[in-house]
Length: 261
Ligand code: PAF
Image (cartoon, helix red, strand yellow):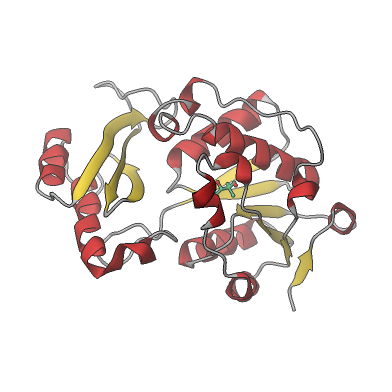
């Protein structure tokens, strides 16, 4: 039976090779993160903490999906040794230094949610400090988050290696997310335009594809340099397309290396 750890003392009694930070509501995307973690080290711990600091909207925080029993089963089946499920006062005991996200935290996903990435970095740093993993695994679906975490690790010289796992998609290419259930089958159909657009070869073709689906309300579509997160130039080596928008008021994000089929 997988161990469920709640206190810092119980956490500190053992050594952890790999951390997979999550907010619960685990799905097949998380399963692949845990399976990848298992390849990096024997002792894998999955944290589940719905981090209030990264939610601008209190209602989103309250309504964040919870499925603890199935989370425990999924983490165990995927090979995790333990789950770390701390309460808020374990993560934030009194005053905690907030980590600023810098200029790349204020654009794209950060432009309308000013404190979001600072909240993400603050909790991730806190989890690294408590768990002290050698390796931590994050999904590529939240590409800006991944970039900012890597940047923080470099800037603060945190002794952890960041590994990323490619996005898991359904048969129609829709990136797996805990939000997808809210879409319904009609919403899912509309959301499939994202993958159709991301797999086009030019930016103009992508824009055209997006505008062919009136049910998708675009927030941003951009080609960035995946190493610097700056807008890509003609000679950029590793270009990545990032996109966000809404289907039936559900916000969806995705990304792909440019020119992927
Ligand atoms: O990607 C997530 O689930 C969260 O942002 C993370 C990294 C667990 C921090 O709360």
